[in-house]
Image (cartoon, rainbow, N blue to C red; front, side, top):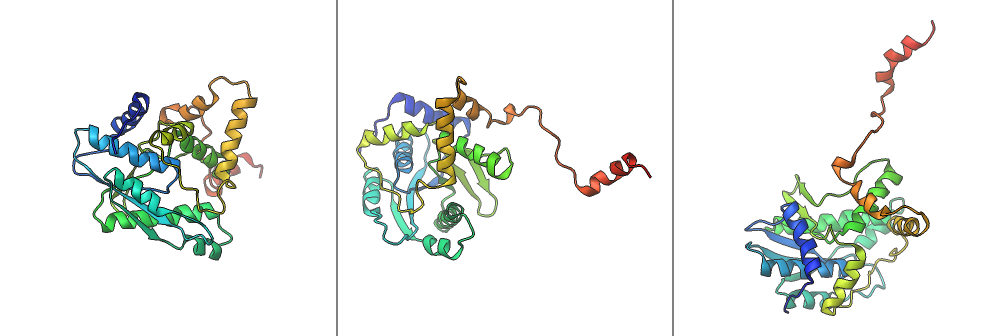
Length: 262
C-alpha cells in the first residue's frame, strides 16, 4: 500500500515525534491495535513515518481479543490491513470479559484497560520490543484531564511519552496533536471501515459522559476557544496559584493547640 498523508496531518504527527523525541534508531515499536479508527490510523501513520524518516526502526502490531461473548470481532480484517502496510500482526485472546464478570464492584473500563495494557506490555517484553505505541489523541488527553479532576481530585493526564520502570518499556502516543474528528476523517483516506468495538459497555462510560459534557460546554457556554484552553491547561507551565497540600492531623496539632484556649 502506498502511504499518502495530507501535509497538515503529517505536520501534526511530526510535531509530536520531534517535540517528545519518540523514535530512535534501533527501536522496535509494538502498536496496540483495537481495530477502531484511532489505532488503524496509528498503524498507517507509523508506517508512513518508517517510509519517510531518516530513522531505522521496526514496527509490529498486536490486537488483544477481550473475549466478550456474542461479539463479532473480525481480527482477520485488521491483520490484512496491517500486513498490507508491511507491519507484522498478531492477535492474542485475554479473558477480560471473564475478569470483569468476577469483579462487579470495579469499573469495567478500568479492569479492561489494566489487563489490556498488561498483556500488551508483557508481549512486547517477551518479543524484545522496547516501545509500545497507543493511539490516544488530544481529545482523549483533555477528557482524561477532566476525569481526574472530577473523579479523583487530581490535576493530571497521560503523558506523550512514558517510561515504565517495571518492564523497561517506553509508551509513546504519536497522535496527541490530533483531534478526534481528524481521526474520523483520516481513516476514510485509506478506505478501511473501523471494526466495531466488541465491548458491551461501549458508549456508556465515564469517558463518554465527559466527552458529551465538553461538547455541551462548547455549544452552550459563550467562552471563545474553550477546548483550546482546556488543552493548554494540561501543560506544566499552565499551573498558577493553587492551595497548599492538605495537612494531616499530626501536622496541624501544634498550631491547633496554639489557637485553643486552655
